[in-house]
Amino acid sequence: MTPGNPFSLDGKTALVAGASRGIGLAIARAIARAGARTLLAARSLDALQGAAADLRAQGLAAEACSLDIADSQSRATLAASVPCPDILVNVAGINNRKRMEDYTPDEYRRVMSTNLDGVFEFTQLVARRMIARVQSGEASGGKVIHIGSLASFIGLPYSSVYTMTKSALAGLTRSTAFEWARYNIQVNCIAPGFILTDLNRQMWQSEVMLNWLQGVQANPKMGTPEDVGPLAVFLASEGANYITGQVIAVDGGFMAGEMWPFEPPA
Image 1: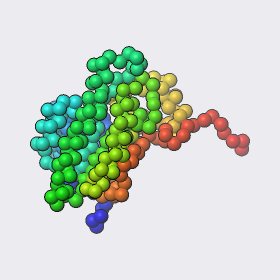
Image 2: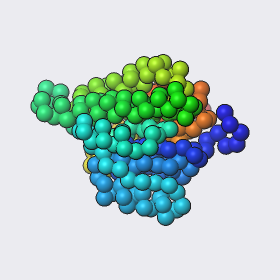
Image 3: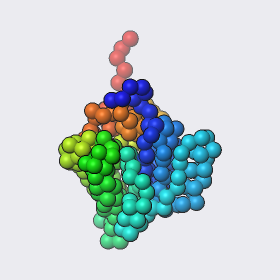
């Protein structure tokens, strides 16, 4: 580890796939503020350009890139055209909440092609370049960070296909951590809990859901995308050089146990 701030990302290039909103945008902002040249990638290029401009107005290095993670040509084009990143963060993902028996083949394939097939191939393309840089002596290592979910650990109803993809990401994290350790590339996965975003906001308007949450996790509040960004910065930094193959929950304590109504007598 070099002297100085072990959590600084100065001199690094980070590529955040799925950075147009929510958790992806919060991670991109946090990484840029930590000093990295940050490439924000997603389908919503207009939104990305606005976000990148805001970061540049703060004196930070940020650029917008077009990426449809579910499209093979889009993946290949971006992976080949941008500077090889020191840090890759895969956030892109979708969900389609319905009963397992009601999924159509097209709905199944759409979730799988975005959350798993696309992430696998895009990581493969970027990792090849990362490894080549290490082998040539141009770089000393790299970081790959996947964004999983509580569904990487447990099952939740009406999210069967999503749960399949996020469980697979956890497995991919562990396997590639071993494969790429020889290149000093650390691979980790962040598993956000109940984080309020545009994708789930309507579901969390229900008082029944909010009351349920208060009864099952240590911190009774919903999380925000900004609660996830700092962990991504840490895992992208030299401070996390000895951490690899881990799936780390950011969940208000949900995975730690469950609240109950018992109180001991005074």
